[in-house]
Image (cartoon, rainbow, N blue to C red; front, side, top):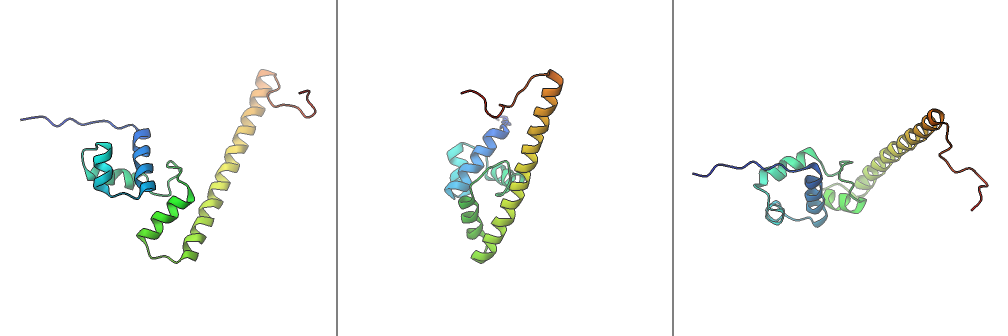
Length: 124
C-alpha cells in the first residue's frame, strides 16, 4: 500500500493557478489536470481563501466582471457600481501606500543625512 504524499504549494504557485483559472474561465477539473493538482477540493479551498476580487490576485477589471456576470444575474449597472466601489477602495489603498513611501523616504533622509529624492532644476 502506498503512502499519500502531501505536497506543499507556495502562495505564489497558488495565486498563479487561480489567475489562470479565473482568466481562462476554465472548469475545476480542467485546471486541476492542467496544473497537476491532487484534487478539486484543493482548488476549491484556494478559491475560498483567495476570492475573485482578492487584492493578492491582481486581476484586471474585465476578468473580474466577466466571472462575476457568469456567476450571478446582476444587472450591468450593479456590476459597474460594484467595480466603482472596488476602484475607489484600491485608490485609497494606493494613496496610503504612497504616503507610507514618502514617510519612509523622509525618515531615511533624516537618519542618514542624505538626499534621496531628486531636486527640482537638477542638471540632466
